[in-house]
Image 1 (cartoon, rainbow, N blue to C red):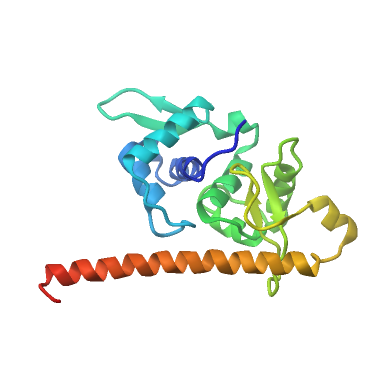
Image 2: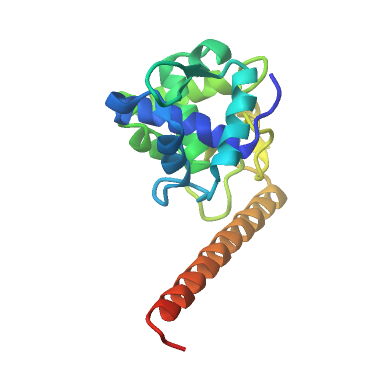
Length: 221
């Protein structure tokens, strides 16, 4: 299977999430899908995808059989087919969806954030499924190098390709029991700070635009 675009991954993640959280409205209409993809909470990064962008992403996912279009009624609706195409259990689908929606996370964070999609008994069960995803012939997840100051390593999905931060092979880490090398941690820390700076700059720009629009509506200079 080819690599997904970030928007295709976001669409898949939203479909998985809403299937569990709002089953009465699933499969999703384009409007509901747009709201889920562009919502400001529980999303990293925050997006502003147009309907045209979403339709293009849906076409790409349909070509991969990862999404189906359902007929009936006056509104076209969409549902995912991740478990069958990726050949993974529902617990793994929940983990991948949460990673696609919220970005890299530790196993403990994933257990908490997956609560409404799948309940894991403990953190070790989360790690077990993550190890299985990382060990597939075409790996679907990877453990990231632990940055300076972090107590636990984070995980990222690989459906869009290699993550921005350097990945550490789980086998090597478990075999040696040693922490990541200094240079790798420095690169990871720098990449994380750069990503955070870009995110904050985008939010600042959005806030400035909002303030300017409100000022114009109130007749203020």
